[in-house]
Image 1 (spheres, rainbow, N blue to C red):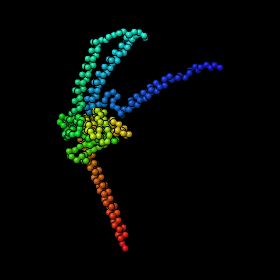
Image 2 (tube, rainbow, N blue to C red; image 1 turned 90 degrees about the horizontal axis):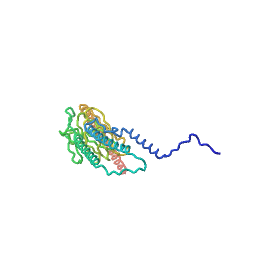
Image 3 (cartoon, rainbow, N blue to C red; image 1 turned 90 degrees about the vertical axis):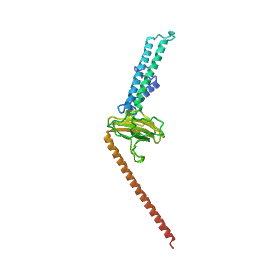
Image 4 (spheres, rainbow, N blue to C red; image 1 turned 45 degrees about the vertical axis):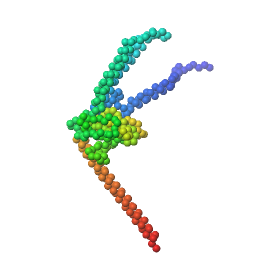
Length: 322
């Protein structure tokens, strides 16, 4: 007995692998678009925090604009040629030897564009690499000492003065040390996770790592710099107004890598002076408390040893008695 096919037969998926690939690609793009904490601005670097970050963002936008013009021109010419000179199937194409003027023209045009971009880059590179002096109303700072074992470029202000902070990457936190005028590095002020700096003051960073490779990155304060064990990298920033700037380690350093966040809090110079004094007094109080506790533990250990010795002597005397 013959049966009539259903009026609305279920449509079969002809290319399931293609649909799966499209869905997977769309999912990956969606995840990357939502991962705002792991990237800067969607199209250009973040800026607004420091002059070097602003210069990087400006240079990036200039190059992006030139590249966009070249891309639109090339793709427009390609689409125009495909539409204008399309022909039917099996047609014999015309044999063209070429256009010498056109070939020389686009070769010279590309060379001129590269020269212009190179000149603009080297002109703006000075503002990116070399920090300016602190403002007259900024925090008074000392001259930055040379790092003898460094093979990287160490930024210098024109007068050589800046607030120099040692940045040490360690799994999974950043340690910030504020050097003072003495040679004892054990009594320096330090903090973890949050770096506090004064506004209108040039801050230079000596970036190192304690265990594995890390990467220091605060998008609004400039580019990222690797923290490598046994090596010192340098960068700088200068914040005009109070604010909080966030970033994180940009180098996969272990299973808790996402927890290695970095925060820079900029405050007024007078407030920073108070914070520095308060932090120093807290560290000194903690050191005294630790020293007192160590003495107590040593006294307890000595008392226990004395009691043990007395017990041993008493036991020996009891054994020797007739």
